[in-house]
Amino acid sequence: MTGLEKLLANTSDNQHLIGILSTFCQGAIAIDRQCRIVWLNSAYRTLLGLRDDQKIEGMDIETLLPTTRMPQVVKSGEAALLDLMQIHGRWSVVTRFPVKDDHGEVIGAIGFVFYDQLDSLEPLFDKFARLRSHLVSHNLIRQARYEMADMIGDSAVMQQLKRQALRAAQLDTTLMLLGETGTGKELLAQSIHQASPRANGPFVGINMAALPEALVEAELFGATAGAYTGADRKGRQGKIQLANGGTLFLDEVAEMPLAMQAKLLRVLQEREVEALGSNRLERVDVRVIAATAKDMRELVANGEFREDLYYRLNVLPIRLPALRERTDDIPALCELILSKLQHHSGLPALKLSAASCRWLQAYPWPGNVRELHNRLERACVMAEGNLIEPEDLGAADDLTPTTEPVEAVHPNPSSGDRQLLIDALKRAGGNKSQAARALGISRTALYQRLRKHNL
Image 1 (cartoon, rainbow, N blue to C red):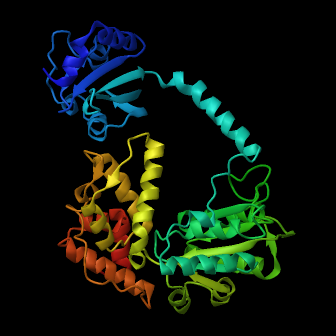
Image 2 (image 1 turned 90 degrees about the vertical axis):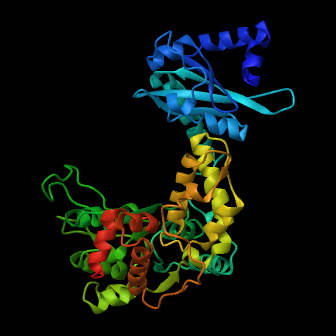
């Protein structure tokens, strides 16, 4: 008999308490230190579709419930108070507690399925939303916008970036943010806006790469009623008008069609915008922050981007460092990301093992901070205990981290991107799926980049 079985059978009080709790839920289960099932109530049997005489005691819980997080509760010794789990195609709300002996040693865990209908939780979520709205309206909590304090890192390159950003915030001039994919260009743009005299005005962002070409003009400059098929009867304001008095962030600006570039140039020069289908000019007061991961000079030379617009946008360029250039910041970034993941998932806090820390600082990070976030999120799902190991981060099936120095600054970002693709394919032995995972991009995106660089 295991320690938990003895505890459950030790006194009638324990059995009585478990019995009471079971009546308030649609399922209850207990496992021992080895994550083997020691008890399952009849309601949970019904929920799982088990026969009354079907023996499951002694079975590994993950055999019965593959998506359970009970083993993590046993290994971490910390409760998971609120979580969602799919049980036989049905979403349920579950809570899990570690069970400890008189010496504080974890001897198992107990889990309860409190609701099998999520509609029951709507009043709770509505009440929370109303409370949060009240706190925001009374300035008791800040709204979810990035500020300079959200730029994590004390490395020399990050300190320099923060100084440049603070100086740029005080100037009402156009900015161009340059950096590889995943370096945090929108975070920096919002931080500059929040530190600027325009902080009380709107911050409006638009990703040019995600916008269909046919909709670019209406999205940016607005449209009058009936300006095109499917247009709003009342017309619509464009992103530029919505940003009036504040900041307009043009992410992936290099993807803007040439025809629209001329209209944007007029906005920057004349501070006037003409909506689609209108013959009236409207005055606007916006500060433009553009961002790109591409080599703008190369695009201008190839006729893919207007030279006059480039110089209008590139008044004050700021370059964001790649993550491989500031590996000293990785521990602080990991701590923040893991904290947020734990907060949003309700899972026990996880920490990095010493081996994981070494792996993270040796890896070249082609996907930068975005890839770091994705790998840590993956690790939170894959980790078996309360420590994240390198294999949880994908070290075994992705690129082997290089210990060789990585060139920090590529004089030509496009050629640097090409070399990253070549290196990734080489380390993956030509396996494109593996190379895409290592780069932190989809396989489709990898094929697009390979065609672009004639690889």
